[in-house]
Image (cartoon, rainbow, N blue to C red; front, side, top):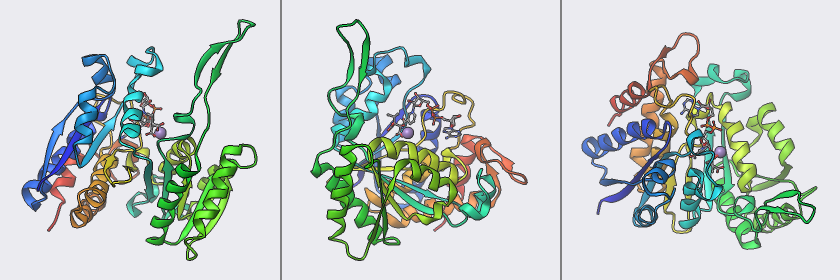
Length: 359
Ligand code: NAD
Ligand code: IPM
Ligand code: MN
């Protein structure tokens, strides 16, 4: 039976980069027999403009009924004046929580051709292959109470709550240990256990889960040190597991190790292994509409989709190899340009990846 993929282009550069991923999916279907069908729906600012809601109920229903979802990006200055409850970003958060996508895998892998594009010295990043496992449906993003209230003095107060249950911590730690078993068997749990009780519990549960994985070495690091270590000596890490907000911040930093935020894909999985796939970057309003955005993070997100949700590991490998070939040819979007390479736009990069697919 063919697999159903829901395409959610979103805002800003979202439609531009998703168009390249769709070209790739069509090529995989027509040339390599990957059995898939695609449907589209609205999310984010585009959905708000059309319906008054960043996650229309029909979009959530279509997402629930699909095998996998591909999302571009949401948000932009146009919608910033809106109340948080109807901002484009709420559409994305609603998909994550509505589908229970608690496990966010963000691999930071350096393509060797891009060592010169990194802002760090080549020897610091060469051979880099780390995986950030970010908790995605809990923590301060979803904790209650939240909001802005007014004190008796008339002063306003902003409130967000960092909260995790043991079971929420346990299941994300379990994902981290399971993937570590397939990799280099090292898990670093990142917390702020010196200050925050919630993450003290996180550390305790990480240790408890680790007892079931005697072959995996567990270490702990405070998040401030982890941010420093990621830029000092990133290759010390194999799998990092952390909460929703720390994972958001650390993965943007890790992206830069690979040359550009335009290179980092992600998979967000639920307990049934249904998945949503998206680049970790945003809608890049500063370059939207110019046809210059890097589509490779989205294309590599398709590879993750093929591997985790569509049971097509060969096709996933094909896509990753095609990206390698295009980089070998010296083609680069503006964000990863380095001396001796040739600048291309979004569509030319997408076409080149499709042309580089091999049997
Ligand atoms: P951003 O990731 O959109 O952009 C940060 C910088 O990286 C910009 O200079 C941008 O041009 C560049 N960049 C990002 N993706 C790129 C690509 N593929 N190719 C080349 N350059 C790229 O972050 P921001 O500016 O903080 O946020 C902009 C909007 O995106 C906000 O509304 C934010 O809420 C939203 N956002 C959405 C997502 C998502 O949908 N998953 C993620 C992050 C931010
Ligand atoms: C990401 C983004 C989102 C997040 C925003 C847009 C809600 O930054 O996917 O990394 O903070 O999770
Ligand atoms: Mn982010």
